[in-house]
Picture 1 (spheres, rainbow, N blue to C red):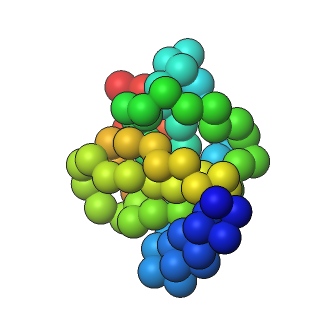
Picture 2: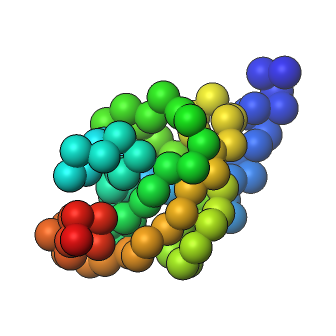
Length: 99
């Protein structure tokens, strides 16, 4: 099982965006998070799968697209999310989730 998780993370890291959960419970909503990608984007995300994502957690996935997608956490768990938008400015990502 550990080998499978390692392979998933390796493939994901090669083909997908890598990011860190920058903020959870954005605007008081436990389903809203902001992810900062390693290439400088701020991703405004709504969670659709119950998860234990905490600030600082590493995630992988195709995060620069609109709509539903799956991201993978460091344990290899798939998390269904809805990408509201991706922004170069953190305040714009907040605005996407808070208006």
